[in-house]
Length: 126
Image 1: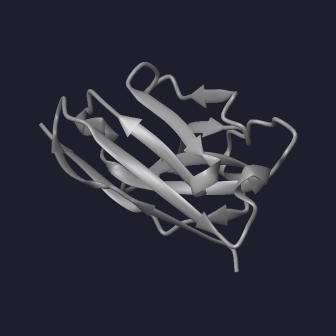
Image 2: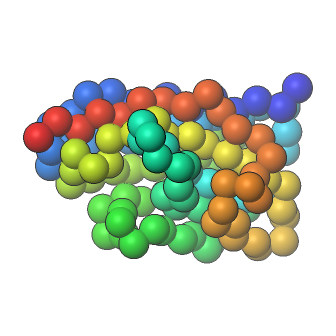
């Protein structure tokens, strides 16, 4: 059974850093494009960053560009999101998502992903 599980969220002061992890099971991880999304209370889910199957192509939302870094380790079936210079507006539930695509695709919208984790909460205090 396909499953993705996020971890690494928590409470951090503004300017601090966190690293989120997403571990996948029940699939061939290297055949999947992956994405990080977030949703704050009362707001729609938005894309944060995405990465192709090999890690050779990435995309970042303007709001996180230069502060967040997405990466993956296919040997460990794990996706990462290194977050630095965190701001209170980064506070949200962060979700990991997977979409079958072994052909170098990057997928930006939540509706383009099939498999989702339960999320990990990130709270940035001012």
